[in-house]
Length: 143
Image (cartoon, rainbow, N blue to C red; front, side, top):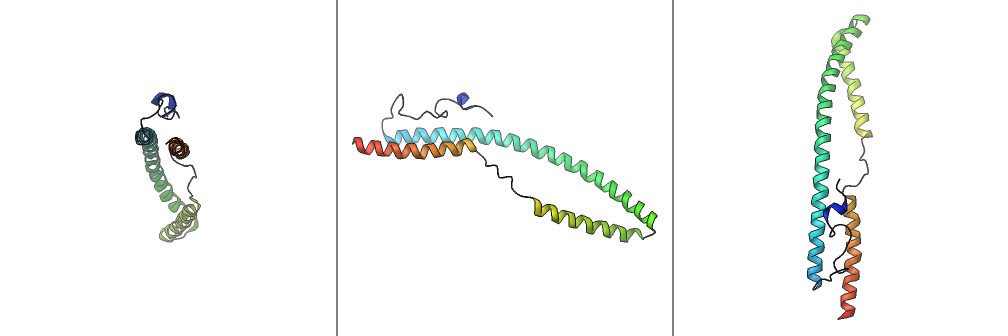
């Protein structure tokens, strides 16, 4: 991910009004919104590249795992059927039920990771809220 210093002073935490004060609160608000939109675009671009990479790798791994598993099941059903003398179709139904049970357990165990997306943007929005409140209070008291 790019650092905040790479994307300019507007996104590095510097607020309008520190070196060159805005002409009015609307100008300050528009500069703030423009900076936040640029930050969201930057983080979304980085996030989307990571997501595409992960999805591609997971899709390839799933395809390989599916074919390996299908071959293992076929051989497993055949081995169990020959060694026990049970009909192959009953062994296949038993394997299907076992897989269904495992899949239900895995679905129940799947939980969101809890990692929030866009952590820098959320922190900046919090700072912005405080800055707008202070700017609004300051501009009202100076009028």
